Length: 567
Ligand SMILES: *Cc1c(COP(=O)(O)O)cnc(C)c1O
Ligand SMILES: *[C@@H]1O[C@H](CO)[C@@H](O)[C@H](O)[C@H]1NC(C)=O
Ligand SMILES: *[C@@H]1O[C@H](CO)[C@@H](O)[C@H](O)[C@H]1NC(C)=O
Ligand SMILES: *[C@@H]1O[C@H](CO)[C@@H](O)[C@H](O)[C@H]1NC(C)=O
Ligand SMILES: *[C@@H]1O[C@H](CO)[C@@H](O)[C@H](O)[C@H]1NC(C)=O
Image (cartoon, rainbow, N blue to C red; front, side):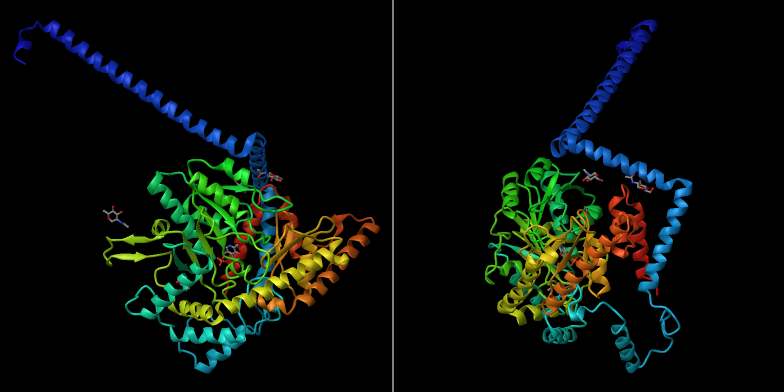
């Protein structure tokens, strides 16, 4: 600076000092502005959250949420009090031990293989051991004693599936050039299922290892789509509370917030107005079930579709259970409700080939209205040192044998085979429903939930403990599903149950009478409900239902999972 050297030193210093202080002021000002902006953003964020909370749940709903949260927290603290904690822990441990004794065979006669045999066994030895394992004492699904669980299409189909397995035992669709037949069958399975669900031109799908994976994939693709196309970083989904818990699993895995919507009596369908209120710019997916697992009720999919279309949000319809029954209800001559791609708001559908498709376990499909949804579930890595890698779903290597089993089942059954199965299964569901509604011995205490149209019939009781019924049926060798919120049980009719339905109804009448009688006796003796000796189901759900904080139930369930891996 040529001129500056001529200024007196003091002036120069003053000027410099002023420049410094101006800079200081500007910095201070900037900091202030920044602080204010951050504060306003913070306020905006929380106001927005509060606004959506109040809009979605209303004032009473929000107060209830806070109340429930507080109760849960306090009960959690209570559970951790020194005296209580040890007591709870011992009881949990005892219960798990009991469970273990039931599930893990023990005693002198039981042989365990917990180390790799030094010398391989002979073929006969392996066969004999497999026979023994298959013959372990179990609930007789073969005689139709188990609700759901075993969805198979008869002995003949089973034989064909086993053959198909054998032919493709080594195949892996990860390598389509090595196993072209498997690729072809897989694509054809998707095409056949798309056809069943009235898919429009351009609709696509993938196969997965089961309903849960199909749902995980549908949720993932919705989340990724919203992120890519709308920049949603705090995704939310809105679920009917009766929707399969696989959606909550997806939300847990993929960090998505869940809003649950009630499904109230008398229809037990999801409440549409509540869904509408819960929609925010962060909503990535709406969900409906056709039908749901707990009650076998089909949500109002037409209404959901209109809502989804209007608000431009994807809608997934869970037909995992409905699978090959619900699309064939019209052709089998039963009542039905619209649920598939014919409704323009429906963007994805999950359909389990391994439920009423009678394919071997480990098989399901997820269908999308167009590739603009499916592409978001793919995983593609162009960078890996192992080569360019692309896979459609969670698994890497996959069993081609299952694809062959699935394909063989679909083409062997054909539409006529599935319509026939639909007749038998829905017919049996209706038979059980009618018995419970009309036989006075049952109707006096049991009440059907909603109006079931597919394969599941659920019932509750306002007069007796429904879990006592579940336990009573258990004692008679049946395995029915216990439900909660509200307490109820259900029967998912499968082909093996069709032949056993009359026996089931007869036993249900007997058990209901027994429970009624036991209650009457206890009351006559002046003992309240508390005096009752409860079975396993009643004990578990009776306690679980009344707990504000279910951490004890979580501990028990964890113990159960651990038990599964006890050799
Ligand atoms: C069975 C079922 C699923 C999940 O299927 P998995 O094959 O057990 O993973 C999802 N939704 C409904 C309604 C189901 O009944
Ligand atoms: C709160 O708890 C009560 C009873 O425990 C239950 O009926 C209600 O549905 C819960 N409400 C919410 C919002 O979770
Ligand atoms: C429920 O109880 C457990 C165990 O005491 C605790 O860890 C958990 O935080 C509690 N839940 C809530 C919502 O407070
Ligand atoms: C069958 O299951 C396997 C994995 O369990 C899966 O990879 C495959 O895609 C499924 N195939 C069909 C046709 O559903
Ligand atoms: C591959 O590398 C690119 C550039 O480094 C990166 O942006 C991309 O996320 C990588 N893809 C995967 C799947 O890791």
